[in-house]
Image: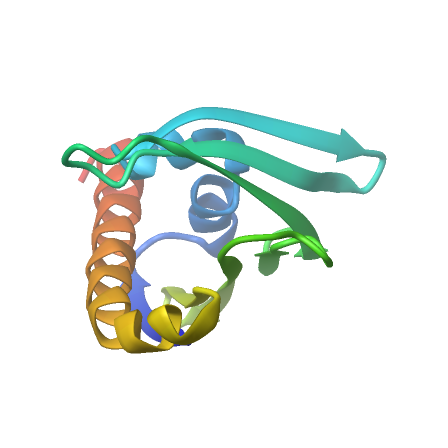
Length: 150
């Protein structure tokens, strides 16, 4: 299993940071490898996210389906591969916390590929996941800062 935990401090109110970082419909704005995004909602907020992920190179895009396992408006958003889903297992938890007049935004992600080949790929997958999460944090920070006219 590849696991990454990263935090960035953003000089903006938590509600603004969360509105961007936890909006599944805007994830394609934050990661250029993401194509089509569909969000199923209910009265409490988003409940399932489907997206197309193009890993780059000659690899074909893959569909990722994730159930929303935690949604606390303005604070926490988590998605995870549905129970019994085949293929790679995925989990992402992001949190926004008031800190030093701004917001600490934390992304924690895990990806597990099936079988022995998946375990052998963990170091490479972890490095790629760390790069992806770092890029997403930087884009959230940039977008929120630009949106505030800084």
